[in-house]
Image 1 (cartoon, helix red, strand yellow):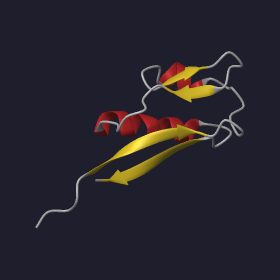
Image 2 (tube, one colour; image 1 turned 180 degrees about the vertical axis):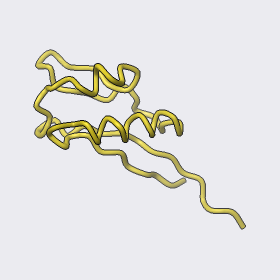
Image 3 (cartoon, rainbow, N blue to C red; image 1 turned 60 degrees about the horizontal axis):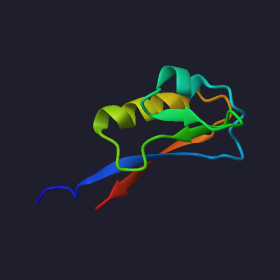
Image 4 (spheres, one colour; image 1 turned 45 degrees about the vertical axis):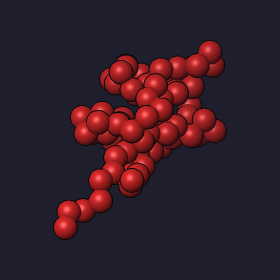
Length: 74
């Protein structure tokens, strides 16, 4: 029997984000910025493994700790 399949999603806590832009510059395929400069995730769907790794890297460099990668299960 195999382990259940799953994936990852990325979120940005809008209250914590200080708009440094590190995530947008280093991972423009995953993050954009709203009119106030606050980061927003561009991917609403389950991330590929490569995208999840990029999102985790962005979470690591976020000075506000506003980015989280959540594991989902099907």
